[in-house]
Image 1 (cartoon, rainbow, N blue to C red):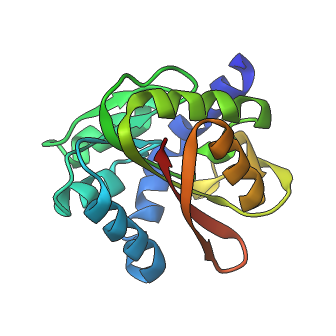
Image 2 (tube, rainbow, N blue to C red):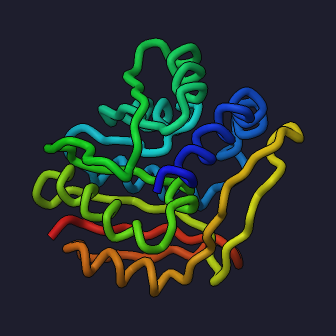
Length: 201
């Protein structure tokens, strides 16, 4: 597990500043994702962990929608940016491959599970279920497909070394059910993206 995790952390440390500049305001042109975030904010009860929060902009948007959200990311450079850009919010370095604690009302995981190998996804979903309070809500965003791409160059042209896993929604939903979640809705975003809403059983 260590090699891919180290590669992912180091890659996002390298592109953190460029990534933050490139993705700032991204939701302005994505109305369906804005709607998914609003729905999540309306339905969730209790604190929310934004897992794979990057520079913290979505964590801040959730707080703007009245949610007590905090961010977790594997990359120390991303967390440093998040703390600098959103000083009133809580951010911490961490990995979804490790236990996340207990008692959160919701977990938002947007396009960060895409780097986790298939055999570890059930482990991650187990950690998510343990962290959620009964009836807690999970919103998961990911790339749709059935292949793995090796990304060697990223935001700002910086070198990266990360696998990007594209997965069919049915497969991801099956993993969620096996982990003890009820999948309540699936949204397809164009041809290559999906958002799943799932609740802890």
